Image (cartoon, rainbow, N blue to C red):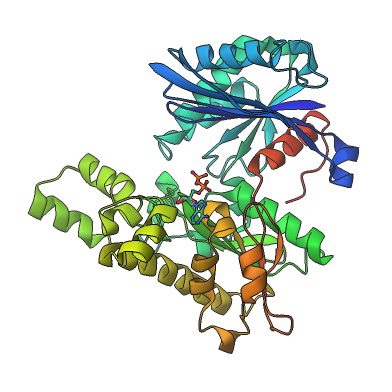
Length: 415
Ligand code: ADP
């Protein structure tokens, strides 16, 4: 089955075409056929398209909305220029999988799209006012473009965390607020945490029940997840993706009293405070320079920039703090798994997070750590260390394609 995976942001659209089916999943032999990204939808959009094994093609195009962006992609997919093996016409796309950020308590699994599912995603807009409307734009556009003939599925960032116990997901505020408004921790990056846990099982031969690990996704957004007996037991993001680790532009954990203090001292509205905490904080806010870890590391190294160094130190200390607290609440774990752009590529960030944790059995092998970059997967711990440390590149699109196949064929969705 050729699955088109769509991931829509408010002004962007990422896609991949992945060839997969139940037998292919079993053999782990899925094939990515093409991928691409359209940014700045709404004005002169920037388009990057790449058939697997060929060079990327980049150009600008006036694309006024997500439907225009999707039309543009489809024209390319079936064009002579793209020459994607096995794809000559739209009929060669057999299913579509969409990423949706928030599924609240309603969507604990991936599901085929119908009108009631769309209404359900709309009902979650209150909880994800930035993300769900953008995801819905993509769904609406692709239903218009492909019609009813092609099955479409949705995969939620929150679903994997639906196994968290009340003690992990409730906030200690009056319980009736949970009852009335469903205010609770939902957690995000679920597709990524679930994918790397699956890869961990494949690499180690462990069963789901034997999977007791801490997965740490460090990208622009960052989150940690305590996985106990194969299921999400706790995670650092909360009602929204703002809580938890220090991120590119998000503050992560903060005393809620700061909000009232800010509004009083700076005369800021709730909207302005929300923007400050989501878009101007984290690595960017502390360094005053950038949200990009690679650039920050270069600043710290080449110019000994004090605030760049401080931002990196705060980032790594926060991850350490979460690892420690998850180890305590899970009664220990067998492995730490790093993923996401920073987790997969930054030798120094991994080394700093794991430093001085020998007493916990965490000991990094310098050579192995330096080799696991640019998509390389495997262990980075010393041979006789008590706890394993892995680098496992995430692949959310692959999991979305696989779940889409499972939804279409009504097959079980292993968590
Ligand atoms: P997103 O969360 O948007 O998907 P990514 O997972 O691609 O983002 O992660 C982006 C982050 O990864 C950026 O901060 C970038 O600087 C960082 N990154 C990528 N490569 C490296 C590297 N070699 N060293 C340090 N950080 C890196």
